[in-house]
Length: 385
Ligand SMILES: Cc1cc2nc3c(=O)[nH]c(=O)nc-3n(C[C@H](O)[C@H](O)[C@H](O)COP(=O)(O)OP(=O)(O)OC[C@H]3O[C@@H](n4cnc5c(N)ncnc54)[C@H](O)[C@@H]3O)c2cc1C
Image (cartoon, rainbow, N blue to C red; front, top):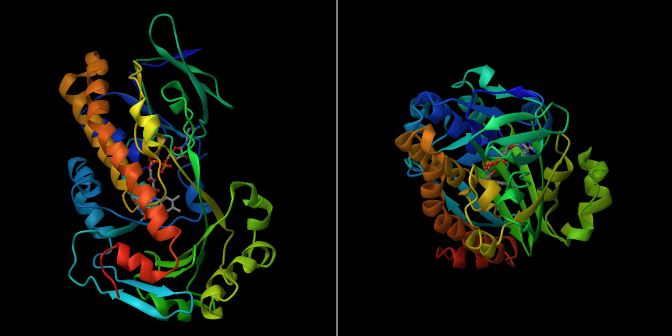
């Protein structure tokens, strides 16, 4: 078994894991990142991913601390307009956001590339899908992978491995609960004949159409294409098999069609005409109880969705990066010889934030994803049309 010198193992090269890696890199604290994707480009080539808005006090503050804010600002889209419509395409609200500098958008893949480009490639081990971790009698931690040899000798393992974290079970016994909401996503490229219609609805912003417990969203991306997201309430047992995700027509004809009866065909056409394979996003959430009953476990901790997974609230990536800033600050302050005090301090600060994030997710489920339509959403947001 190979011994490694890095005291800290970060599991997962998502926004949380890479932010932590970058902050440790700048502070010259040794670490290694293990990521299940086979390469840096795998996700870009195989998964449809959308856009994220970074908030001033969390996501942007993390990039400032990481020395990456100017680069982010050169990639980000500011003042992105938002249109809210109903299932017939009637517009209920238009937020121009011109001059709004607060919550710029960046494509998920650009954020990952930005963070990756700030790290030495040798510190990220791709194709390392972890299966489990085990504590040794000497107190160190060994990590077991699905295809690679185990690696041992870690003094701290940080689970930044997202919704289905393998590290989480070492700390928290309960599993994420299905929220009842399922999203499918794909994209429309500029060459697609439907593109001009999408551009007329969303422009360089977001077009969000809400029907009863159904949504069709269009988001403008940095390369000019549109990310298409379709949300609906379905029971867990009705979540369709991956086999129908291969093309828009298969997914529409065999599954989605019946759920979108009565919707304007202009809107459903966006789903039926998508260019790529669909990605399936059943939305799960952790419970407040899981966080409140978590007792600190030495040598292991969690950041990001691994700990406070919720349905999308617009805060997920921001909270994930904020966790990493706080954990990094405590590690840097106390040094690698007192990782125990650093993780205890981080967890004490993070727990109430995690509970608040989960509660916000419940609010979003009730008032947005399960709403009857845009009127209810705008009323809940305090911006009645
Ligand atoms: C449909 C949808 C839309 C969303 N929209 C927004 C939004 O607009 N704004 C926002 O702020 N948030 C949004 N979110 C939430 C946001 O995506 C997450 O909160 C954020 O990505 C969490 O970052 P993370 O680094 O904790 O986890 P992740 O981004 O999930 O990253 C985890 C990483 O760990 C890797 N990994 C997983 N398992 C293993 C393993 N066993 N071994 C090794 N590596 C592993 C993964 O490949 C991945 O690279 C959305 C989520 C969904 C589902």
